Image (cartoon, rainbow, N blue to C red; front, side, top):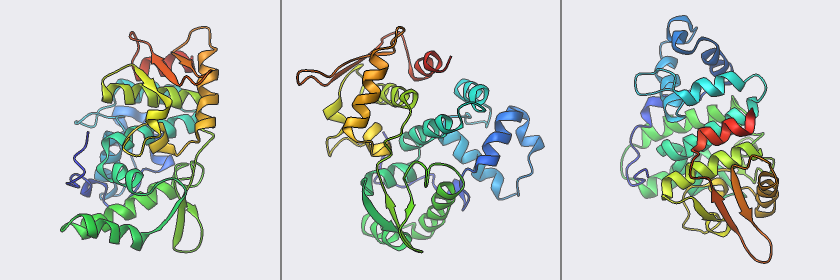
Length: 257
């Protein structure tokens, strides 16, 4: 887990978010993208930082097996790919992890309120954080994450709201559960644990999804013939059991084939 006492590694984003057109070009060119892009010089390190924290590339900016698979299904499932990106950023980007843990679902925020919040927590690096906030807001504006996934709904020119995203796909639900299980080190989970105030990761923290919406996706996953999980949700039970022979990517492959 990221050490949230230190906000390191956020300067890499510059002031740019990951944009939809950059992602689709990267998926077309893959490792040749760095020779064929039309990015400005300041945009290159920013795109590299976002792709790395999204687990789409490795430390040397080469495409990962996850990146390759997402590239192959991107045309048919663009929203799912962005859901997966947000799940990975929530675990690997100190900036995103700070955002999802400080701005609870159904809370409003502004750029200045986020800056104040940062200032109360950290003594230094406010300028870097301000740039990174610019990058975060740019990510929200240039991808479905902001408005469509309800992470940044405009209330006024300067005020925004983070709301529940209840249309989360069942594929992303499964992917998120497998990533969470990896982190906590067990394949036996409880729905209620994901909604505990001290749970810093997981599908509720990532998307603010309502329990009823999550349970309905779990029931759907539970009724598949080739199940990636077993969900026991009746008679007061709330247990989810993931398969020992699968990881997040393998579960995703089963669900998207």
